[in-house]
Amino acid sequence: MLNINTKKKKKKNQIAYTLDYDKIRLHPDDAISTKLLIEQLAAQNTLIFYKDKQDCALINSRLPEDAFVLCLQTSFQLDAFWRLGNNFIGIDATHNITQYQNLLLFTIIARDHWGHGK
Image (cartoon, rainbow, N blue to C red; front, side):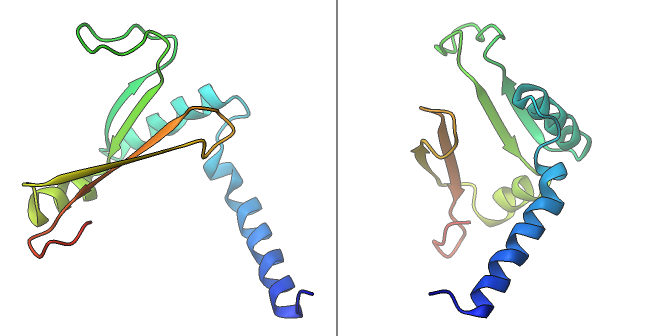
């Protein structure tokens, strides 16, 4: 049985999600929403590589023609990479974290001078 504090916390989280929904999903169509988000991030000097499923694959990339690829690196992440550790990069992947089956999420981690991932 949930206590009152747990119920309040769940309601608070639902309200916060509802308030942020327009920042998270910029358009009901996911393809358009993604392009709008990319435009916002580009205006903030985020490094972006984007390949829509309808875009041609780059020559010699060995990507399937119908691949969706979105790579982002914020200016903060780029600065941290160069300041804290640019001699090691770790990579991890997970899948099926969204409603889209077989969509892979890759996380890239740079290790700092003390051996910790950032």
